[in-house]
Length: 251
Image (cartoon, rainbow, N blue to C red; front, side, top):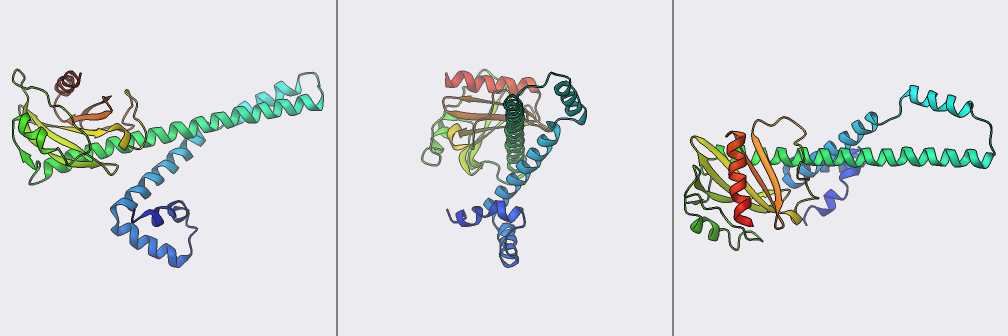
């Protein structure tokens, strides 16, 4: 990758530890490189989440005092036993700290992914050409993606539903290529985004929360090695119905 040398220094750059000349060069590069600016934003959000999680899971002064009184009130034991207790306490706090860091990272990543999905939906609908292949026929839209993305998928039959297919386009999430389909129900437009699960950075839980309030209804799931997102301002029941049509088609 062209940006490997830049992203290798990303931690040092964000900590302000590069020489001043390299800092200025990195500032200029980040302003003009979408890949590095996205990576920098993701790392800043992760650092903030870890920092907040560390504060949330730090033992309170009252807890420390209670533990000290409890230990002081017990019969004195050998120094070796005291060292063993101290080691156990350190291990407990270390495990709690690592769990907090992992939880913070997972929550930050989930919020970032859902935020990017919402941005893709808004940007596509705001575009003068929201779809690259314009057709309501699934047998026209599906073959259009062959050779453009590294996976295949099926589209549901809509003949007996209230949904209509408007078309599709290529899209990217975390630099991974995927399919972006636009459906319509009444006057609402819904995005269906499909990516390879393995191409995304880590896995999203089936019941993962966006972490922040979204102005859209959204449903996501993993099936057959693919990650699906259905998002739009239609009602939650419409989103669930379209998601169910896709789930049934893939079985």
